[in-house]
View 1 (cartoon, one colour):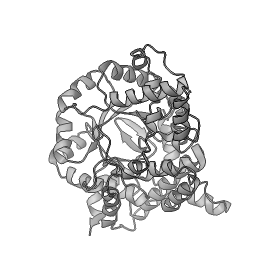
View 2: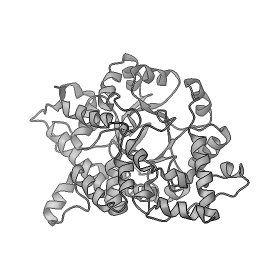
View 3: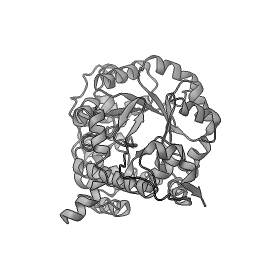
View 4: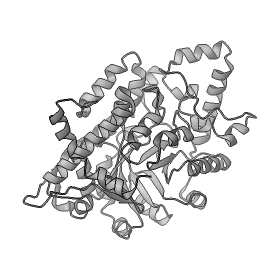
Length: 431
């Protein structure tokens, strides 16, 4: 894990990103404009359009995705001036650990559909900067491989909480051994959302086992079928070709058949519609680090999270990929932070609130923190950067948005993140 000293040094260097570009006259590895970044990724994947749409797509009509962005635009910043912002510091403390900034890499699965390195690439890019990296249960690389790529940097694990306790216990054991310090439990994806882009092309990489590496390399899961785990560094060929995998299966290729069959079994295992609040007690009993619930949008659920002992929540719409037409993440955050119970728990240091879904710029980060979030998760742009330039692209994109945030924070009259959060009411206003 990055040291406090390293965290401080990184935190104070974000603002130099633009100066370095101007001085060197060399453009960044990937575009700083997320719109340009997205378009470049679309072009890069023009021979694999289904892969791009799998990342870009959202639920139904895309209303939730659009509303996530629209709500950020409704909130306006009211800068304060003639304040000393000569020392801008983005350091953020979460669950007692100091990080270089309030940015966290969102959990995203099946990343080898866009780059051969997949999650190892994004973990390496985040790891180079000490930014917390959240690995998904739907990863296309193993727990151990991702941990190795991430090095000594902070990493969390996002759990799709499955039906079989012995498999869950095995996964928890592996992530502890591999240095994952926090458990993020996704509670809004017990079934897959209605995603027209994927449905219209029948594109679902998990059909061929891509995105099930956690299961295929798990000794307890594989023992149920009398098999040894796949090697930790095994992955499907890049680029992923669904037709090629179908042909291999039709031709009787044993590895392709096993990967497909077992991958689909693992997917069924990790999708459980029967979990309730009462089940959290079992999970807490077997996990001794921070336990965070991702996918909270209702103030009542935020309060229940406190009641049932969660250490934090991620206010999230799953990137607009689950429910079409639901409340935006930022509006949900604003409503949740009106709860006296949530505010008191947060003020006590026993409850952490994180925002996910819709973050695209430094001003978005500022607005989220001003409305009460202690950190934000950053998703699709990381995938676009990975598509274009692998780990170096991810690192560049993270540097870019944090430099944007540092600039916006200073221009708004604040020198550190906590000062902004505690005085947010004076710096943002909704139209």
